[in-house]
Length: 168
Image 1 (cartoon, rainbow, N blue to C red):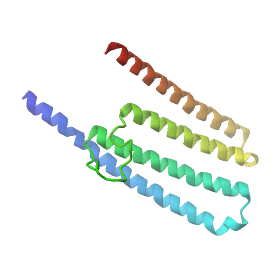
Image 2: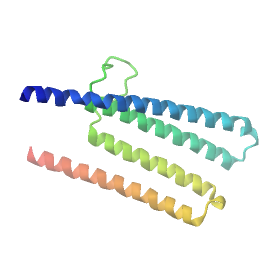
Image 3: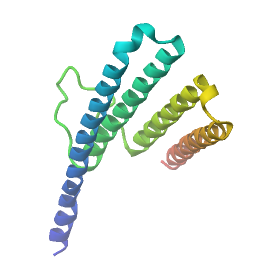
Image 4: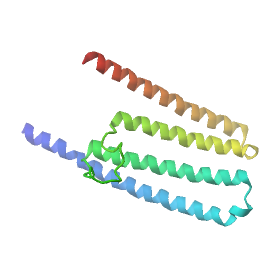
């Protein structure tokens, strides 16, 4: 009975696989939006002001960071919680793949969120005449909340690692 229950619990990890397939679809949706934005900006690039071009590039960087974030979650989550991805001999395999644990993934996610938030804040500053002071205030507050959260998560992981090494 116990062995059957343990096998069922262990096999339940496969219930996560559809979530990662859904994230692959979300990654494709980000690609569609990226291409749409790119095609929107290309025709007017010669007549754009420099600040408008920088804002356009920041929008593309924002989508790229979001896509990278989703890809990290797909790879790491699948490998950590479902099954190993058998690509160890592939020359294009990212070095971090297979080595990024939940703690590392968490820190990379927070770092990506901080970067995305910083891009939104930079876009607001570059277009400061069109953004209200209240909106800028809240963008700064939210960004600082992400930064502080990231620092606290890193500190907690550092303390946890120190405690582990002290005990064993």
